[in-house]
Structure formats: C-alpha cells, structure tokens
Image (cartoon, rainbow, N blue to C red; front, side, top):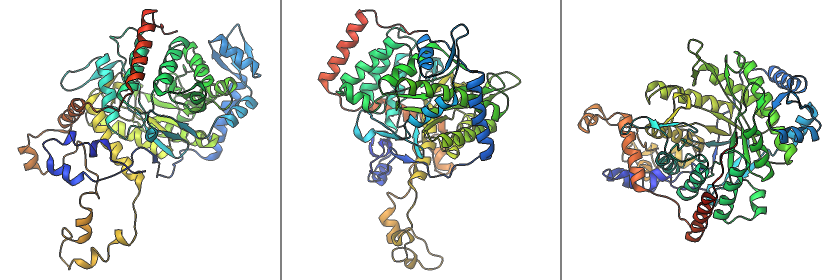
Length: 518
C-alpha cells in the first residue's frame, strides 16, 4: 500500500511555498504500516535473560503480588492461584503464567475507524503514539497551562495530521471537563476528529461500558464484531512494586471480556519504586507484567494484550524522573529481550525530562527512541511531544519530534538497488569527469520524489535563513501546528451516527454520567 502522507500531499501546510508544493505533490510513501528494519540489540546474555525470567516466576510463586480488587482475586483463585484474602496477596504458579503466555495472541489485528488505518501488532511491527497523560499543555504563544478540552481537541487534530502516528493517545487531561463526563468528551473527540486507532481510559466499569457503547454505535459494529478484533485500547499501569490497584485490575478484566486491547505497562523508576540496577528493575517490571497478562487470559483466553515496560532511572540528587538516559536505553534493550523470549508484541517508550523544547528535550527523546528501535519495540509510546517527565505536552515538540519519526519511517521503507537505481544508462554514463548530475535523466525523473522533504527543518544557508526572519525550529514548529489547526482536516462523519452519539452523551449526562472508580 502506498499513499501520500498528510503533511506532504495536503498542501494546506505549504501555503506561501508553492515551489515545494509542486516539487513534492506526487511523492507517495507509506507511514501507516511500518516494519522495524533494524536488527535487535541485546544488553544481556541469553542466560542472564533466562535467569531474570526464572526469578520473576519465582517471585510470583513465593512473594506474590498484591491485588486490591476482589473480583480479580477471585479470578486468580479460580485459575489455581493461592490467594490470601486478609493480605490481598496472590501467589501465581509458573504453570499459570506459561498457560497465559500460550493463549495470549502473538499477532493482534486492531480495527481503526477506516480500514486503511488498521494495524497489526506483532514482533517486528513498528507503531508510534504521541505523548500522553499529561496534566499540562504548553506552546510558545499561550504558555504552560492546565490541560483543557480545547487542548485535547487540538492535540487530537495535530496527531491525526501526521500519518506517522498510527495510534491516538490520551494526550492531556481536559481538566475543565468534570470527571464524571470527561470520558464522553474524549471519546467523542477521537471519533469525530480522527479515524485512527483510539485510546479509552479504564477508570471503572461504568465509564468503560459507556465508551464501548459509543464506539460500537458510531462504528456500526455488532457485539460479535467488536469482540472479534479490538477497536480500542487502554494502558494499564501497575503500582510498583508488585501492586495491582482496583481500576487497573478492573480495566484488565473489562477489556479482556470485550475483546479490547490492554497494553500492560509497569512504570518502574530505578532507585525509587524499583531496584537501582537495570537487571533488578526489569525483573520487577517483568513480574508485574506477567501477573497482569495472566489475569487477562484467565478472564478470557485469547484476549488481546501487549507486554509493556517503561523503566528509567531517577536523578539520585533530587529524586526526579530522568528519561533518555543510558540506563533508560539499556532497560529498553532488556525488555525487548524478554518480550522476544515470550513472543508477545510489546510496548516501550521514549520521553523527556526537559522543561522546554530545547536541545536537552531533543537529545533525551531521540536517545530514548533509539533504545526502543534497537530493542525491537512494537509500539513506542510518548514518541513525541512529552516534556517534564510527562507533566506537560508541547505543541512545538509534537511537531519537531514528528520530523524525527518521519525520518525513521523513511528508513523503514528501505532502498532499491536495481538497474534503474544504479543508473548506468540514465545517470553514470551521461556525466563526464568533473561534471554534475543535475540534468542527468535519472535526476530529472526523480528530483520531485527521491528525497524526504522536512516539515520543520530548514536547509537554507545562513544568509537566506536570516532574510527569512532567522526563525529557529521552535518558531517554525509553531507555524506548522497553527496551519494544521487552521486547515481543520478531519475524516468524514456519518451524520446519523453522529446524532446517535450526541444523543447518547446527552442522555447519560442527564442521568448523572459515570464517576471514575478509585
């Protein structure tokens, strides 16, 4: 499948740059179905990885995990786990884990709003999701502020624009929307502003059921079709060390029962809620992920689930999270080794602890990104826009990071080296010694399609750049996101289904909505 990327074919972003529009109007690429072209890198030996896995199984059997939800404890007990109701500790046998890993699907087909946006999550696939879950938004024009409904919708529109983001994210918390109504707002925004694979919060069964109902009706899905392939996903964070809280356990159960995707993500920071060593922290993360995966398979064998990890270190001087560090990179590599050993698609993450979109932010995000790429991550979350260790998302950083992801996507496409590409007839034999290839037939055939055209990088020389206003990348990125929002491109929406969606939201709102469960 080949297609124009939105930023290269749309033309809206190119106003005032007509030469570039003409030069790139016929370039087709595929940023929607990427495969990781890089051989995976190991940080530990296979024996060390096996020992980490065996240690995790021992911990599950001997130490157990604390499960706060009674229903989840009952499911574990029915599956053969040893459960202490007094302490809420669940001890899971390795045979239970092995059975869960055997039934968990190795390849997951995810249905988006449009068939050309569907995803297949498996080892070797490569999917990017923009930064998520931040309480604040920031941009150069409006500054740092609590996340709002407007920010959520704008972030959704910007993320929809770039084909390199194949999944949507929870972006920012729209704090001006009451919590008992917030899930209606975020779900409607995703259904109407994008046709990509959507995210749903798992904040209690009532909210989850509301979201499932909205999604099924808007997409015209029967219960059987909804169950057959996931049409949404959620992120499940364990509470390290070794605790599965009530909303997260309930989310695992609800999503598994209805055939929707859970991405299990222990969030472990070395030296804080995890051992200070990479090996110790990743072993603990593995324990928690295996416990959660086992719960999904006990709930419904074959339920779609992704193995996940998000492990970095803290700054031991301040206790603040640090991202894009060498240990963050190493932890991603170790997680990739464990994921390949158990055979499941898996999620890792980039991110940045910088307070503004500066060189620190770029360095940290890219170093974390390359750790994920070298580790063979299936889904890379927080791949763009994240600042302050997740406390804010930046509009400008979303754009500048998308530039890097586009370039990674170009590498995924590979290169051909046939006779046409080598060019003896149409290039090499046409140019005399000391000549140039500007007018060679091969160049004339390919000048408008051969090279990636940047969305925010500026290749002009210093003089030209100065004459244009000496704008740095942040300022240029501001212009990009503003033009995206002004263009307001969104997928077509069925008017009748939109009416049904809004009627459902109005009805549930009048009934009091659904408060999140704690």
